[in-house]
View (cartoon, rainbow, N blue to C red):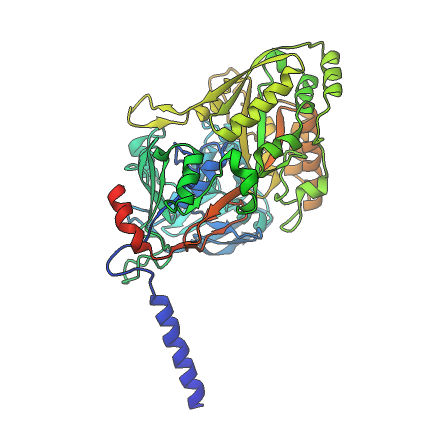
Length: 578
């Protein structure tokens, strides 16, 4: 018996020792790691339209919601400590969600009202946001987005400071709901901060931005530097003397854009000046494919078409544009991509985790070019050519794909002008930069525009429902005579498609729901308001000096446990340079 007690005491002391261990040396705060995470992100609002995988890569470092998805797609508690079913009757189904103890970067606790505010903001009838569909299971959510109910009627409320009550329209699949809660778009937000600085500015300047994730932007100096710094309060108990690196090991992550293009960044990586290269130069990808760590993302590089453009208004014309693209050639150009065989990428669930919507619905798109059929469709539509503009982000990958596609479309008789968009100065404050591309997309002022359609969750409904007018998330035109609903940004409108999404929303079981969503995708790729090009992959190079990177199901990286060997050796030079 004494031996057993001794072993227990040893185990307790060992666990206490491990809990108190630290990577810190002396009184320093930890490693400053030079890396290239991704291209510039100009807006740190997690609810902005996610049209660029770079946004997701950075947002995931700065914000945390109720849940997260592990690498296998299983939802796990993040800020949610636990939940209980509060009411389960024919009249009402609701749950109580209890929050863990965590903090914003200004030291205030993350509270239930922060979630209530964030979700209400997303569902405001005056705000366009395709992520609204993630919350359409909540009581009155749809009516609010359609302008038929007050935002105060939404089925979410703070019962107390750290308890959130969520009431649903009907009994729901809670696994699906908590999978949706992993979306960065459903992260909590601070009403006081947004009210103070305004929707246009609060997320664009380092001194304004308050985040609740492991890192926060401390310096945003485009086109020179992005400095992410460990939150000093992330899950740390302020009543205890806990080590700063208990939950997040690195002190700072630095991306020096001043180094120049990606080839210069690669040179810096090869020289040992940076330890992580989050994007590999296009002309070096084939050569470095064997050295890169590659994973599938839940994102489809997609061309969105303005269906109100007279030249592009006929589905036959849009299908012809799709047929002219050799998706295998595009995948070869990008190296880290797969030819799109549909709109929904492979990792999105069908009925539940472990099932694939893409596998269940098969290949819809041809991956090789068919110019003959494309020309035949144009002949049927009475179109022999014309002029339009293709808008792209001015990144080497997006431009390379656009140049190839424009060349193929010119073979059909079209005169295609590339509009390569760079960021621009903020009109309100000249020291801030606006994502000009995002402004063009949100305005709908384009002919064809290239986006990374990032899936908002592993549920296909959120991606497909955007094209149904009632479910688009774009709200109501309060100035129109009949309070008209805004359609998808493409202008696409189809009663048949709307009916399929309505049927999916009201489906009695998972199988029926999945079947209707499969039919919706097939119809979408008959009408072609969007042209899926490739399913995107993430690829990075990592130094032998760096370890501890992990990733989630979305394909984004987690740097919380990253360690740099002998970081003190690099620290003095890095601090002096920055």
